[in-house]
Length: 176
Image (cartoon, rainbow, N blue to C red; front, side, top):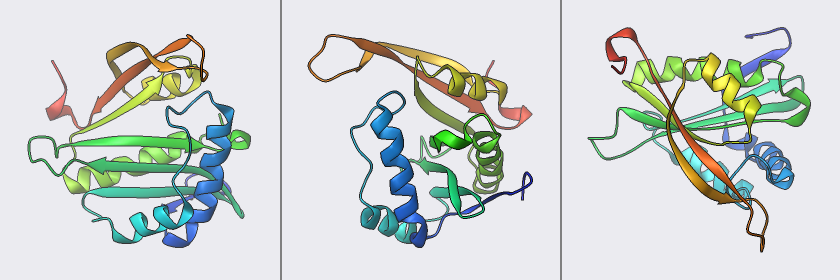
């Protein structure tokens, strides 16, 4: 347990249905993710079961019987990029700003260090100020901005910037 009542653990294939339901809720908000919909539960379960644990990490945050959050990290199979893991983080609306995202991130750093990941990279929509504040407080820095990258609504010419953020792990690997 990282907080009272909060358990962060490795995801299991049996968690896929709950994770898909969580992601469906977040996609329906149309404010945080770039894609249109979550993968099917069966597809996610197959990924969790089959992915190489040295290349991918799947974590869930659970409070009682509720799935409070989800984290996944993936390393590139290309040796020039394998020191970087790309992050996806999702927190259920009822559990936002209660330490769930931070707990997932901090647990993931253990895996990164064990597997030789030196940098965590992510994409976040510019309007997601709560997520940006979390990432900055965890040591992530803005590395790039893709202007007007994300269409806000179908059929409308309203766009949002996509931010690219990264965090170097360990003092020896700090960017200069």
